[in-house]
Image: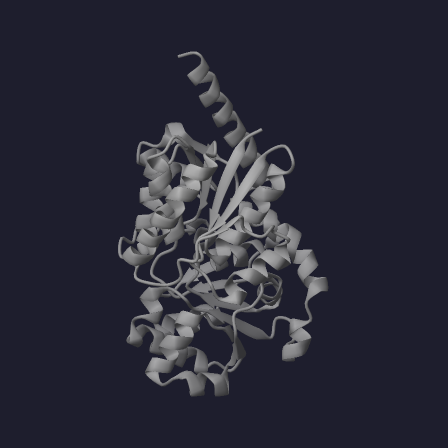
Length: 367
């Protein structure tokens, strides 16, 4: 039996941890640590309830703050948990401050560090997430890469000997959630929406929300669209709109919502004609659900979605956003590539971790 300590702190991590927790099953023990990086109910607690995740064994309650403050609080609160639990492996997910904080502490301990979603690169060093990814990968013992592109990135950084191609755990969860979402939510009816007759908008990255000109350009573009636009707004984005004096206009012309539960969001994403987003996770979810995506950034950590023709990068440029939304996306599903695996990534991850721990134990015995 392997004793695993899983660290989560933000919406995408809950989704990924769900798949791995199911695969760990009764054969291994898991301790779940929630850093509290996302503390809004619909960004945190509702996901545990909806996915059936057990309540966290530890809730660190770090809350918001600058990147340095938040990462430092995570490290300070996580270290005694790690010492108390003494796990065989710590699993971290993605690219948040929770990921990096837990990774730094674990790298200085006797526990192995496994990074799920290793090897992603946007090649934009202005993104805090890019630093978190790179630093976590170089600190990790086990790199669990979702795609061939991610494997290639790690090999270029001389990390190939720690790297394993697993497929993407988000696909595992999405396959589970898609059918359940259809039965579990009536959000289209409640909002009076027709399938394929609305645009879905999400914005949360600081590069957009903290730069008034960019945020205003994106929102002004969406306010002029003839289609109905559904906009579940991240708290950071709502605050930014309030500062710019845009909130009333957005409320008047767009369908502005509080953050949604996972199943509600997946159902909206599955039935939208297009999604406009700056989220890496939403880009991938859209691809997996066959929903055309417009990414209001200049780069992506998921280049496979762009190469396949399902994702168009526009940056915060009104003309390019409009052109991308109006693009036909006449794509054949029969020839659509499947770079993210077959929905069994979590099983592969658990097998790889088990083998790594067994090898480590065996090596210690034969010293």
